[in-house]
Each structure stands twice: as C-alpha cells, then as structure tokens.
Amino acid sequence: MSREPVTPYLIARDEEGAFRLTIRETRYNSQAYPIVTATMVDESFKTATAARTHAKENYGALAGEFATK
Image (cartoon, rainbow, N blue to C red; front, side):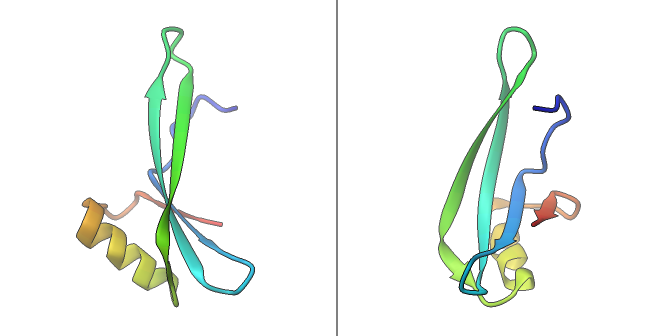
C-alpha cells in the first residue's frame, strides 16, 4: 500500500451502471502507516455528478476530494 493519502470520496460505477459513493477515512498507526476505512453509501446515483452533489451537501466534500473508478 502506498503512503500517499487517498482522496476521501470515491465514485465508482457498479455492475448495473449506477454510480456508487464510497467515503474513505484515513488514519495512521504508530509507525505513520496509513490505515484506510471505506464505507459505501447505501444510495446509488444515476450520474457521477449526482453522487458528487450528494457528498457536497451531506458530507461537506470539497472540490478536489473526489476520485473516480
């Protein structure tokens, strides 16, 4: 695993073509190694923009905090 911090929000397309939002939290152990916890939001979205808007409104996401897959 890389020591570079991951972006806190991941938007990925699932098997059915819907977009899913995953919230990732990074914390560090005593050796400064990153430990990432990922939690997928239950809701699915028709577009990546809708997922991004949901993250901004409900989780306080900022521009530049998103990754796509």
